Image 1 (cartoon, rainbow over the protein chains, first blue to last red):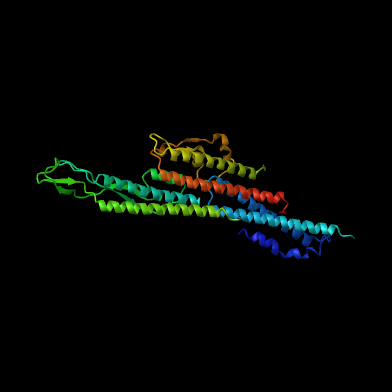
Image 2: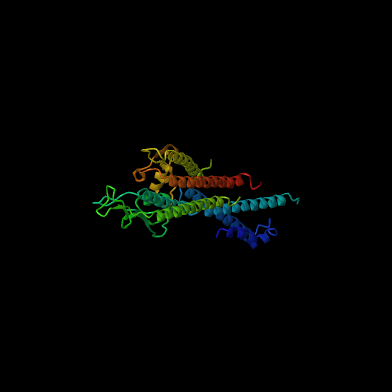
Length: 102
Length: 146
Length: 123
């Protein structure tokens, strides 16, 4: 079901070691985080493409049901917003680290 | 789509009730017609509907099916004449009276025609209520997500 | 505005909206002329094209055939001969109005998603 990606990103345990290994550059956790981000992006993209197809079918009168289309669009929007918030937080964290006086 | 089916079904129901009212009106208008001594006179009609269940499909398909003699809800609608013995009234001075002085009128049961019209009106209102409810549900579904 | 699949969706939605507006005019014409002798029901050319498209899943490349210039009000075909039935026209009008609202809501939500991207995730 489409709710999964939202929970998966938030509950992924590999986010915890991120602060400890920032700048250390080990391939394990950083590679895991990179994979995590790309998977999340893939899921959000799939959801957004699904909404495009749904809207086209709605315009041509071939949609299965109106409420299903609306629900999927709302889920896609929420996934997208969550992804943007995650991106903003990661950017803030990165800038914080970069501003550190060494 | 889901609300298209609902609209087509309600429209078919309304059409059937309107046909019932039309037939009842025709019967009532011919209630006092006289049968000629040699031939047949007016036979009252009745709307017969045999339901085959609801068939899903597009609105246009349903309307086409309706035009071909079947209802949009998958029912077969026919208008058939009722059998009945003509009503006889004693009137020797009538030009169409037979040798016993009886005049034969069309066998229209006025009371049952009035009952048919009343029930058809109530069914029509129920169909309109169903259509309005379907429309409200579809519009409410659009409010998902604020 | 945007290229790719979102451009197709927006153009199809706006075409369907134009068709809904024209359909409303055709239905209003039918209702106004319900008792006119010899009047032929009016419909929108978009509906005929949709029927020709069939119930198969829409292929975006075939949507290119639906253009704004080809959209117009035309008399209904021979299968719709007969007097105008008022309750059918009113049912069609209700369905058309609901469809119009659904299309508007779809466009609003789609642009809402794009606005999230433009605003950089900040409100």
